Image (cartoon, rainbow, N blue to C red; front, side):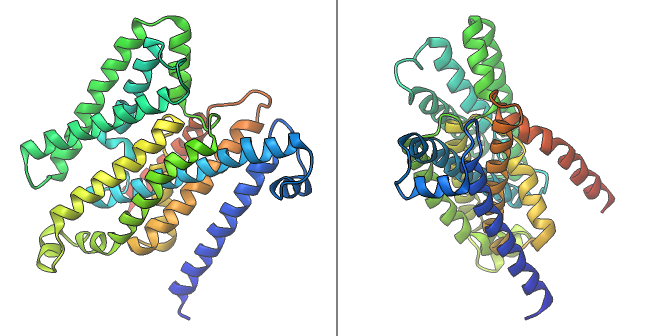
Length: 334
């Protein structure tokens, strides 16, 4: 076995071990301390009813949601970085977070969230979907070839528009609504249930498989879109499918977990530094690493100031900002 292949195998093993360890730590630790034996007993359906409820109904869906959301954001980030040919790109560059936040804040201001627990994620998902349609509509009306620069500019403009909408809604809302909106926009996995996990999984997992199937095309497009077209790659179809699916995955994560930044930025870049730019390895490893990162960040958010819980978006920002500055410094040097 040659050295690069052995290194990639070691990276796979490390990340698989890490995500398993993160899952166990997330289920074991929290406001109520449990031993490993108690966790395993609860997972087998034995032990006290309280322990089974904590493990199976509270912590397990939260940890699985962290894997899905973190993995989806990191995978989307890797795809956006490939399409925009910019290693510092991230999922929210297309205004997805702004649209989702606007939808959620609007429902909070209208008082509709009290009607059903599904109102908030539904509003956020609809808002994200509107943002995606606006960005694609503007970009396609300007250039049917979906020019990267036009798409990027469209995302910035749409994001700014939704930011203005959020500011307007918050300025007209009462204090409880403002507090709820701010907390949601900081990101949290606390409301996770098996039902919400199933919804996010129904978008994230099939979407992830589609994006992974485009890995070879993304490799060819990295050489240049014109060259990729000569080699038989349907460049415009790949771009539209990849943009659309990556946006949908990010929207599903934002809808149920709020705005969690930097996962889609730093994780793919870190994985790229370890295994290179071959998207056949980069994308699946980014999914695993992103899930591991968010689960560990959520664990830290729960235990560092227990019983007070810090929004997980704050943890990812505190970790992500210095890491981003380090990556930026390395990029400028190279």
